[in-house]
Amino acid sequence: MFTLKESVTGAVQILVDTLMCEKPEGETTGFPEFDNLTRGMRRGCLTVLVSPPAQGKTAFALNIANHLIGKDPAVPVLYCSTHGHTELAFRLLTIASGADCSYDTDHGSEGLKRLTEVVTKVADCPLFFMDSRSTDEAFYGELAERQAEKHFGLVIVDPARMEHLPRLKKLAQDLDVPILALVSVEKRDTHIPELDLADAAISLSRDRMKAKFDDGTVPVTFVVIGNRFGMRGTCRMSFAPETMRFAEDRDESEPGSWGEKISFWQKILDRITGSRKKTRDQTVLRN
Image 1 (cartoon, rainbow, N blue to C red):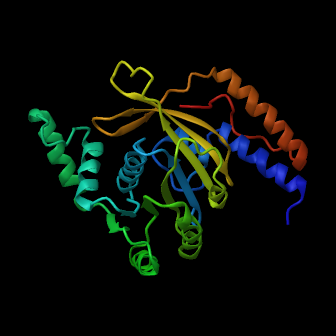
Image 2 (spheres, rainbow, N blue to C red):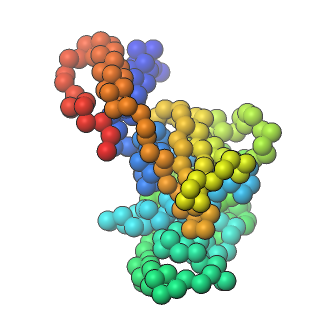
Image 3 (cartoon, rainbow, N blue to C red):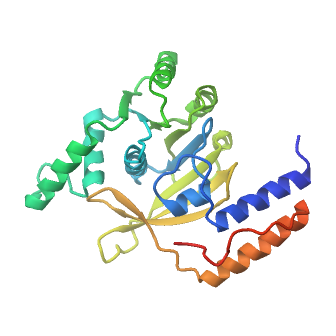
């Protein structure tokens, strides 16, 4: 049980940490603004990414996997999917190299060079694929065995159905691993009770009616609609269909406005906790 004071203190602390871009507590995705908003994917927690079909959920998950296995040290990732493992590998090569891996693409010497370098680099990276077409108890049992063997830093389930979420939430807690579940929903769905089970619920939308940017990318919006450990809010990115890469839009907020916000909320936090401890220089806010 928590008092209102404890709850308000925790909420304001999250807000201050977010505004000051403190390092997220959970596993990161490679997208700083997104991670700052969600505060990362924590061990034992379930994150759900929802959107109508063909919006880019799989591409985004592979962008995350590419980031994690490329870290030093690398973070092992298990990708459970109904997609074929070779199909996913082709997509990952496209993301990692920035070269379209379609059959009819003329890569040229530079494109072939990049692909060769990427294939050599990722061949031994700790990314593993597992067939999830049959999500029965045998599947969950095998997933637990693989986790005990490889100690994954993230498990991705693509796709997951709504009825899978309670089992995936328990699995994340039992195995002490963050799980990212990709769920397709109809556009008309406005409230999905099952999402209340998630520790973080995020919607993804790609407006194909909007004009593309000058570089050929399309605007994409992520909305954090539920978050037990961070804030709700919106993160805007661009998506390049040819390379399946996502990139965050630059924050055009005035730096001074962030300093005022941090100072305001820090004073409130100090008043609640009775603390007068100085925080780090708040003039250096965002890189």
